[in-house]
Amino acid sequence: MKLKFYGAAGEVTGSNHILEGDGVSIMIDCGFFQGVKVCDDKNNDKFPYNPAAIDAVFVTHAHLDHVGRIPKLMNEGFKGKIYSTPPTREIAKLMLEDTLRVIAREAKVDGHEPLYREDAVEKAFVHWEAIPYDKEIVFKDDLRVRFRDAGHILGSAMIEMTHNGKKLIFSGDLGNSPSPLMPDTALLSDVDFLVMEAVYGDRVHENLLERANRLKEVIEETVARGGVLMIPAFSIERTQDLLFELNEMVEGKKIPEIPVFVDSPLAIKVTKVFEESKAYFNKEIQDTIRGGDDIFKFPKLRFTERSQDSIAIKDVPNPKIIIAGSGMSNGGRIMHHERNYLSDPKSTLLFVGYQAVGTMGRALQEGMKSVRIFDEDVLVRAKIVTIQGYSAHKDMNALLEFVTAVGDSVKKIFVVHAEMGAGLFFAQRVRDYLGIDTRVPKSGDVVEIDF
Ligand SMILES: [Zn+2]
Image (cartoon, rainbow, N blue to C red; front, side):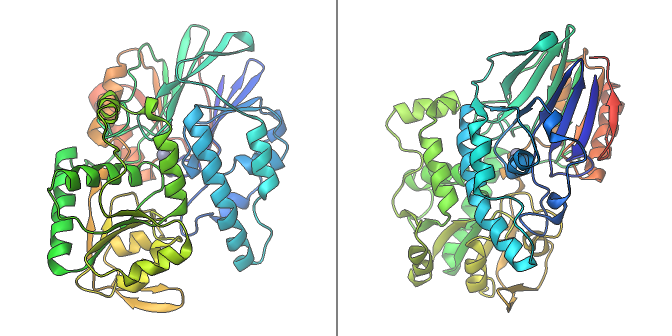
């Protein structure tokens, strides 16, 4: 069989891999390249293969860098089925519908046709089947595929394929277990080939307790200064993790009750999917919910879906907390709040997620003193804080543990979803510590495997 790497190879985004041979051609993920713009120009490039020749697409999870180009695949002739877990299907629908607005706006600014329109998104979901974890799908020639829990975000999965008595895993993104809400990453065994992410292949996160303490400190400091705490957050998982932790802190009287706004229509919709998918939470959370606690509801929390409610947030006296998208400050309502409060030395901008190279979030995180928002120069006087522990990804040590646990059977590892430096660093570590043949493919690489 051949493994073909077309995206997230030597970089973090644009996830797109193909397994081909023995009369089948199976794609894993078809995501956006993301960077300066929500929808990077590279997404406009024609696929370097014939989408009509692909039999099926397996989707690891609903993040846009894993699903963003699926409607484009429909437009360019893909006719097969799309498979994912049920929550991934639901959240991907919300994400892609939301993306339509963004790509239409960006296309207008740049003066070209949008990457795709509503009809392509609708078509994708006609072909999109939801399959629960661990249920096998059988292809011709005894190729079996199933979803295993990756513990990354709601519904996230590793793709496990067996063929000729061998096992191949596409990890998708691997969860930062133990996660507040998600189950731990499923344990694997007898794996022969591993295509795995290493976004944080060269970094170590703060642990859960440290991150909760840090969040508490940042809130206390902002309250003491009478400022605004702005948290750019991804709509999936990060927002819900934050709500869960704020819920604990407020109800446990560990922080003062101050207004908390979730100012993102998408995050509000995704939070509803979370509320309807309780069976996908870890056991502890399921028990908590059964015990009667609504984990996404506490005093002074407000969901501001309508834009007039969002605008009215600035009339609410400080201190207050605003959670809004986009997570990398490259669009979304957070930009309005950043324009209003970045120049205020009493306020704080808190990063709890990955900031891609080229985004305003990355520039601010690296200490930029002035930024341009909506044709306005804004001086940065607010405190800039980063808490790494909120990552939904395994860090270097956890990734290494993941490989160690999979064990002696692994013959080859392909490191994807990592900036080149992090990928090479992690690959070297795996070779040094575990002696496994590990490489970092580049985009366009084709590798023959005995699978
Ligand atoms: Zn992800």
